[in-house]
Length: 386
Image (cartoon, rainbow, N blue to C red; front, top):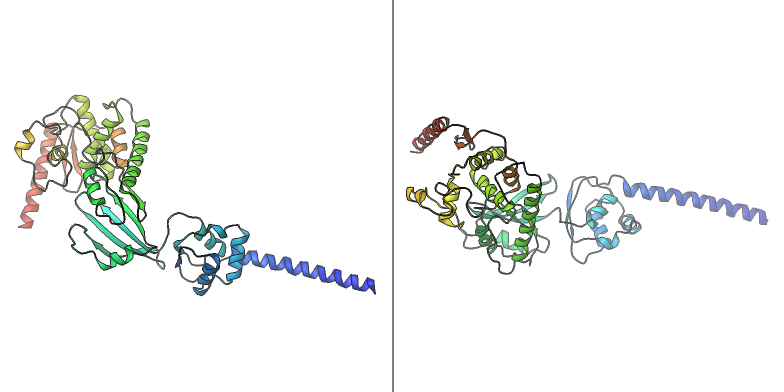
């Protein structure tokens, strides 16, 4: 009898172990395999939430087949306490393991509403946009000029005050430090006063910010980024450049930045100025003259007068020798790299060619022909407008 009981118990134990093993394999496969989500969704994880609430939300939206298995998988992988608040894009067919990784890895939210404060050379704008999870593309909600609009759009105010909204400041290449500080004053999610930093010291880029961040700290981030870019470019500079210091390289880069918006021709533009410096020729560039007039405080808004071209000022490169005393804008990485690794060309002249780029020349005779052609293009355009 005891032998029979023992035999039955052993059989039961073997079956139980077999079933448990099978259940574990099934659970592991289900946790790692493709999920049931037919279309991507934005998953909101409020502050103070937990894996239980998240799992139920996912189940309601058809993203997981078993809320309990989702929670057990997060617990088993030791990620339950790493849950982050935010709005996250969950792609179609995402597995439970992938979703757990998405909501626990940290970093910026990947879904929902984003407000971008764009600081441009000629104007600033605020854009409110939302990610469409079905297409993975942002859809613009509203865009406005904070200086021109007397009242803030309701679409902006409501989303600005939403706890899950993300914010960015996007700095265009070629803006001046004065322009940056002036526009940051209107970014109403930032706090504190800030002085105008040294010209050229800010790296044009897109910066994530949070509500309540300090304007001074944001400026500090921009300065540290520019220091890194300049140091790397200086370390990898070409041999025998007519530049003695990284500061001189930054001045030249700012001139290159203001002379062309065509990325691929920046090394050629830089080569013209480097060739002129090597030959002891004056740089003769309008953007430096304009900076001397405006001091970087906005755009000139008119042509340069002949009297201004003849005036002996520190920024009038038609009169002074060599570089002006400071940068004339905040140059981007490409212009800094171009200034320190210019193309090898014989060019010492360039003029606009009507396409957005420039026509380059080695001799004054060739340059004069290019200038004549540009004058013809200007006359044709003026006639078309009349």
